[in-house]
Amino acid sequence: MAYGVKIAKGDAYKRAAAKRRHIRIRKRISGTPERPRLVVTRTNRGITAQVIDDIAGHTLASASTLDASIRGGEGDKSAQAKKVGSLVAERAKAAGVEAVVFDRGGKQYAGRIAALADAAREAGLKF
Image 1 (tube, rainbow, N blue to C red):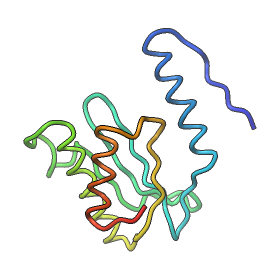
Image 2: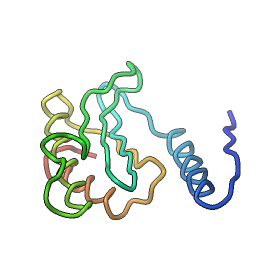
Image 3: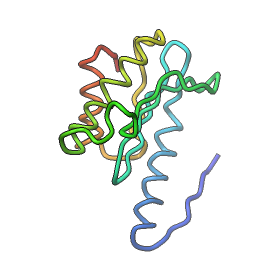
């Protein structure tokens, strides 16, 4: 099944390109009860991570820079992404999740995305 994304100009073109990349990734990646999907959503202001079981359609754990424990904290955005990664890993482990499939959401695996993934790995989540 082909998915079309409208071609646009300027910043809208970048969003459309990211949407195409995410659709391409999601064709191959799906979360199961044994190995749910860790999806990362990055914006200019914050970052969100969710552990999702796609078969049941449930979010098992989530963390964001909007959480009270992280909001207004010290450090740059990469430091906040590391905090989000370790927090989502702790919450996923508490929910009984040991291993996940990483979904970078069409974004490049660098910077804040990589910092979040590394922190989640250090906290004991397997990719």
